[in-house]
Image 1 (cartoon, rainbow, N blue to C red):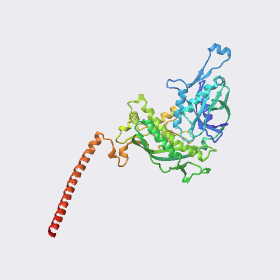
Image 2: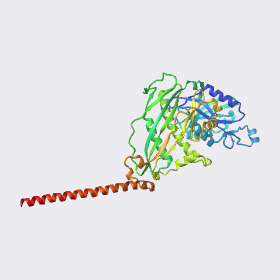
Image 3: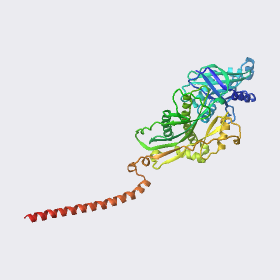
Length: 464
């Protein structure tokens, strides 16, 4: 249960100054930080304003429930109105750009004290619920979210924690600290290769999701080497600077037996993962965050492929056509291996030496990534001021023909025109050689039989 919110002093105060310069009577945005079941503190690293909608409307505005004259006479104040769907979409995209140890933990609201009090707690909890559904805190066991109200009339901060199961809001303390400057970096490159049978009726999303789920089990059971030293529970972190982590994966299990197998999925590549260790956090937490970063990174890439395959506005785009082809593969008709690339991850400098990430399709450039960062993360800078890191090559998924991948299975493959013609000459040659051999053997056997008969006949004649 969270009792105190600790905000990064430099970033939070900078956000407050930006909000003070704004002429908007109300604004909403996301809180990026860390919530942990093992701590009663919520860490708030940064406040990310939600951009206007596609039509230019704000995600948060004032809503007057009564006519102006009547409201003025009764002393009523305007309540806050939120575009829940737009705010949730922003949370989804921000979550995709965050690395291990950083998540969307709630929202902030910039509004007067009167407007905030005029807004129903049920409305506020509903907004938080919409955000939590698209930005879940995987593996934390935390069912709470943070709400920060920054009032400009009068000027003050107020923090509340929302219990997502009940929707109840309760107050908590707030204080400053130098959080980002004290973060430690843990990074690894995780190489993987998964082979899973594909059932004939399974769609593309289910097939890849099954592969990622299988990989999740491997990663969760992996042992970690930190700077070459095997990690053990209770290990303390006494070293400064970035740390390199290697994961030792257990021996692979046999492929699960399934009926109606149409092919074999070969899912291979490498993931560059990165996680941050906050103050007073254990090494076990950052290792868990690093493992989670591997899995969420792959899930994000799958989401990108599915999003582009469903995007009708880019029908003529090459990447969209590749995504559509991949998602429309019919497994039981696949006889030759079919490969498609996963988007590759890049790292972009963010705050106080920390990074965020984005994913590039084959036809995209660094400029495309920077445009997304400016829109989603409110990153305001030219590319010349950034040293973008490209830590990985593209991951790839190969939908392999079951008959090509399994040794000795070609003779069992169903016939198809190309395959049948290719094998007919080979089979015909084998039949010709087999027939000649059979005739020769029959002739040899017959000759031996005649000779043996002659010998017996001659022997009998001599005895008589």
